[in-house]
Image 1: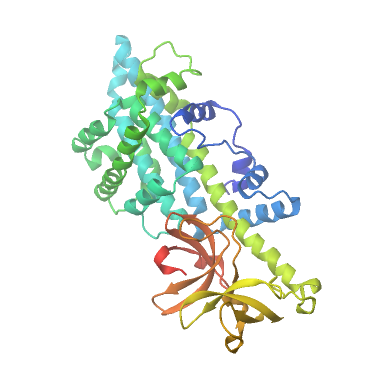
Image 2: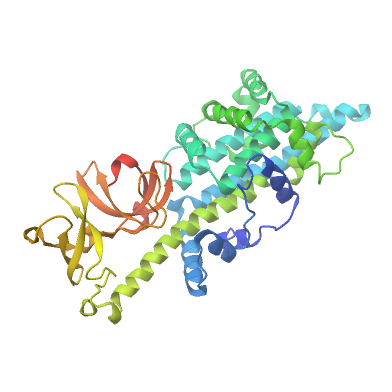
Length: 433
């Protein structure tokens, strides 16, 4: 049995060559990445919770969710680990190749190790493919979708996920292959075939995760993935002005290598870092903690509802909405939310007066059609994590009540009330109200 997500996060190092390399890249996206280690510490940092009992509940729920194969968390971790283990093997081969170019009596090594540019290109291409597959697994997207990934990369990637992509560009692209690495990759792709790629150790490590029934199909997906992402990479380089020399000056502060040849330093980093696994664990942990936090908070609220002190006789209903409180009420006919004031409460129902309307419109409404108007941090569309919404189902032609768990641009990860987490999904802005 593999390690739990708690073990994986607890074992992340505070300091290592990987951590030093990632911190050195902070100049590309200042302040984007913080090396969060320790699971309980991560819970506090991500959710802001300080109550030990609440943290323990989140910890337990996250551990449970991680074991659920339908969630995709374990698969994502397996992908990040597999590509990095192969990466270390390729780094060793690349170093051997560099030695063979410099020392004539070791030239025979060049016959059994890949040329550095080809090895680095395949390495980079496979890391892109792995990132897309892991992203889709974590977001409940049934099939790997490069375009869906690029949309999120351009608009929503942050923290460890963004730093992973920055390191990919800098350490696996620009440093070993030069400033024109994108055009160089195109040349290598055009001169390669599925058979040659299939012999690569990294391909062997992740081939079972790649879509396609044969090496040719898998190579097609790898190429498609790069074509989708290269625009973002080019934009990053243009916007930040990052250069191989700038990267070397920052990572060179902790690497003592006599030879400052860029691709030699890149090969050393290949052999000594596991930034994909390190940041991948942090990405999965963040996603797990956010999901667990939402579920735990809902459970705590439900416990409050069932406690005697929250009965309607005290002027506050079981749900926490009080007499005199202004809320929003869903109107099924108009398919919209209206402001209203609670006049009376009873179990799971509220007698409300709609703001701006006479008493003739006062009505009893169900609890699932009532939501709070107070949200600490709404997005540009007026939605916030934890907010109750209505979600339109085209198949059923009906609205379902849900709460927002996560926001990425104009997409919302939601949990349906009275349904288990297997129904959680991403929905677009035009599907919610």
